Length: 141
Image (cartoon, rainbow, N blue to C red; front, side):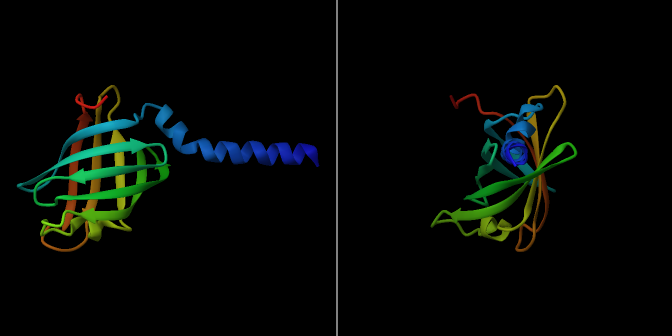
């Protein structure tokens, strides 16, 4: 009985650490900035990644903030699901609301200090696959 309890406790602790372990294998937590693009359109992004989730702030035409929860590691990618959105009261875009429930994939180039974002905007004028790269934000300490 005691052995089974210790084994289950150990497995539970390991499951809680999985997001942290994913970052420990070359993934970096912290604040990043860059841009995403689709065709001729570019949008600035500031992002903060933690083992349990992320927060992305989009500039320009999007002008909104969206949170994402960490779901799993899938090969070389970390997979998040957009979970909560806010838009600026002056913003005409509602892209972040359209992202809620959709998937964000994050990859990190080997020996590279950049992250690659990949997600699909499902509806509205910005519909399509958006990709981009982020680098560490040197202004954030």
